[in-house]
Image (cartoon, rainbow, N blue to C red; front, top):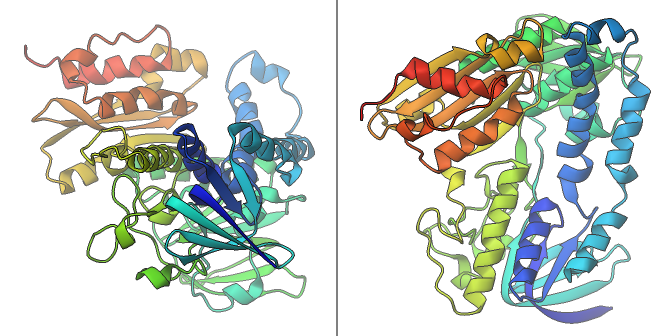
Amino acid sequence: MSAATEYDVIVIGAGTVGENVADRAAQGGMRTVIVEAELVGGECSYWACIPSKTLLRSAAALRAAQRVGGAREAVTGPLDVAAVLRRRDYMTSDWTDDGQVKWLDGAGIDLVRGWATVSGPREVTVTGPDGATTVLTARHAVAVCTGSAAVLPDIPGLRDSEPWTSRDATSVQRVPVSLAILGGGTVGTEMATAYAGFGTEVHLIARSGLLGGAEPFAGERVTAGLKELGAHVHLGVTTESVERTDDDGFRIRLGDGSVVETDELLVATGRLPRTSGLGLEAFGLEDGGWLTVDDSMRVLDAAGEPVDGGWLYAAGDVNHRALLTHQGKYQARAAGDAIAARAKGREVSLAPWGAFVATADHQAVPQVTFTEPEVASVGLTAAAADKAGYRIRVVDYPIGSVSGAYVLADDYDGMARMVVDEDRGVVLGATFVGQDVGELLHSATIAIVGEVPLQRLWHAVPSYPTVSEVWLRLLETYGRPAE
């Protein structure tokens, strides 16, 4: 059985990115439908950002209290892991999407449940759970917002052993006694922090150092923080093979000859796009491949031109620009506005920092990694800025020397770095490592996106005594620019 329905815009994927594309298109007057095979709200709401940060928060709050005299003496009990899991269940709405569906209804966005295939130009065929198909046609645009999934690397025995992916780690109902984690990136280090906080014996295994894309001192401090929590950190080693043990655990053989045995194994070594089976090969694109886009999120062909006249868009993880929820939502807003503008015959400029482009994806991406300690960064690292050809100066300052920091926590330990473009006198990048530094990040993001001259930043006076005073200390260390 088949039904046909015409819309202005079809969005494939009802995660946070798809929701934002649909919302902006609908606000622009476009009749919009969103297609989803799983839960409305997507990965972030049920298996990634929200549950992972919820799992991390309770132990982080407990550690923060234990660092302050007076509070430390009042905290006498251990973490209640069962209560943490109940709070996680609440935050994910017990993996039901009634609230998100209600939001779609309120926004005037239609929902079709099922698996989507782009079956023709501006045409999407949806196969529902009952096998029935619905053919949707779009007058203006189709947006692919299907996200990404965990990669299982080609390690002998790994796939057959059925390890956890990030979805399993964030939706767990029983915390294991021991857990091995393959991968030293954001997911690996955050889950190592969370499970070490639960009292699980954690083995974090990485081929090189931790948080390789960050400033080196960030990974070094996170390594030390995890060890302080009791985690075993295996760096610079490969994983040679994985097998199940007689008691249904895991035996992991490492390249240095050592063997790790744990109850569970989490693989966090990377992501791949959820584009397989979408039918995009009919338009000259790779089935299962990342989608290349321009700054308004139109999908480009191998020649760098918009596919088939420019009706196909892709926002979020699938375009591989910045695999972060907030950047995906930023891209989604640009895409939805661009779709609506083009539909009305308006010119859409791709000039940097315009209304319809995601310029910040290139050199102004903020990210907080909720490890022990936290890592907050935005813009270019010193190495990336140097590689890009900038003439830079790097300024470091210990956050613990700021009055607000040692009021916040006894023996506060942290580090701030500012990367300065010497030719223009503006900040190119900033990194903060320490307790609660995520709340410092937006000021750095504004300075970088706004290209605020250092001379003007001297007049942005931080309140005393707050950790934000580290900005003043960074500027003082740099020295006041000449008038």
